[in-house]
Length: 475
Image 1 (cartoon, rainbow, N blue to C red):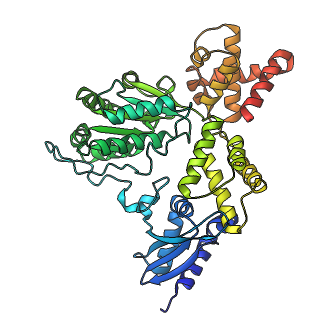
Image 2 (cartoon, rainbow, N blue to C red):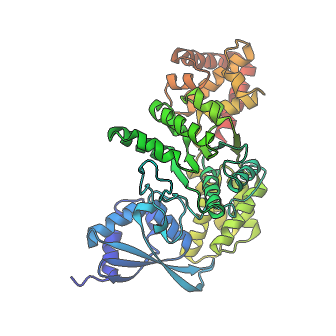
Image 3 (cartoon, rainbow, N blue to C red):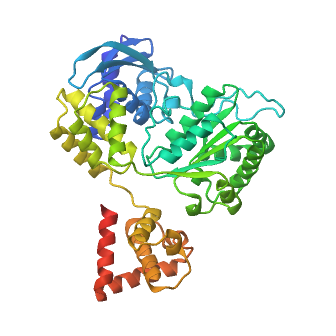
């Protein structure tokens, strides 16, 4: 057909442009340079490793669709990374990395070669009695303790993780439950523990799996009548890491099978590591017998990092990416993006991207522009749990007190305010709000909202409560 790399890439760009926002196209696709076309393998040049990681995490399916359309089903993509520093001067070496859409689509931050881990177990079940499991651990080697920086917000969880990795199943931290909000490093820490165990104990079988994937496998085993094989497979693992265990909420069959697997592993001195977006006490629709077992070991919270830790995280990321940035700019970003580590690193990636593509120096002006856009575009979604926490702290009480059955006036008012703001700031139904705030029914929530509206008009002090809380929840 006489197609050249330029022609193929030009056609790919036309397809991509129709499927994403103009700004995203300009930022992530315009700077790409087609290098060569060998049969059905297209090589493209990208400015840096973070750029390649971003494409593989966010746009791999789109790239695959565009390439397949042009070169057929056997098409593949190779990245040529041309390292650049902040001012656009070329560094001496390039690195070619094959794209792997299957793994990249489910990985978060990945480095070459992608083929070293995949999203599915190669052998989900084994013949009973076989001790040597030939399975992939599903661990991402880039998530390590070395790049999980210690700070006040994560010291307990990190220290407990290191203790578990040194002696899996041999500490009182079994299970180890790591909990905290979005983007605070739960998955990173869970992988780091697994990676460390594999390094220290190569013969141990370590498996990382999301609770969602675990559930899918269980459902499949029931359909195929292989439930016993499923249980047996998981009972042979030495260190089991279950990510986002809150996904099991309301799934009684999966909870039941996990209960039996957990008991067997625990009784046989195997290590269980669990991550969740909330503490056991706040988990909804998880059976009590499971929750009680989650409390057998240690529950360690990952909190929002303080300013000093955020600065350290950014400096570490910049160092790993080979980028130099002035301290005042790093500190400006750290001061203004406080919500979570993922957003913090995302802002810096955008900053480097703008600098690299537009060939401009990173200065405070550029940083302000990026941070303003970033903060605006990543407005935090307020959850019912977060609302209860804010209201409880405001009235200096525990969340458990807020949810209790007591009829003391100040507690009732705090509860009604939590319900009012849950209706205002979330898309949850009245029934769902009631269930999460002390197991009330939808009529109670409706009554609470009406009461808050009425008291806001008639009671000056109560109106101040509403205004203060509204401000805290919209910061």
